Amino acid sequence: MLFRDQTLAAIALGEVTLAFRRWKRPTVKAGGRVRTASGVVLIGGIAVVEMSALSEKDSSAAGFPTLEALREMLGSDDGAPVYRIELIGLEPDERVALRGEASLSDADWHALTARFARWDKTAPGYFPSILRAIRARHAAWKAAARGANA
Image (tube, rainbow, N blue to C red; front, side, top):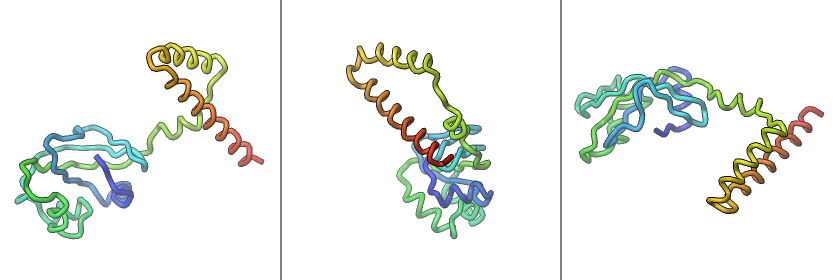
């Protein structure tokens, strides 16, 4: 489920509490979470609704200026149902904090290298290239961190 940056900001502020999508089958579950660049959108209930049942209140809660704008976004009836998705809010992605705390000991690095070497037998050259990219990124991160602390 994709959201525009402006919509994500409005979800974070509690201004957008609904989303509507026309799907053949839902791509999110009630109680689920959607990871985005701005954080994790928390999903409440999901229900199929008729286009004729949509109201101005629904369009406003979904961040649309008018009911017509919401209907235009949903497009013409192609046979796929319209889903009403409750958006509970936006919370920080815990993985972002973990990235800053990640550090590998020499033993961790060697264990990863050994694992990739085993995997490399099935896809030669692929996993060593991943390790080189990680090493280069890590070196760049350390250099930037040293520069910021200078």
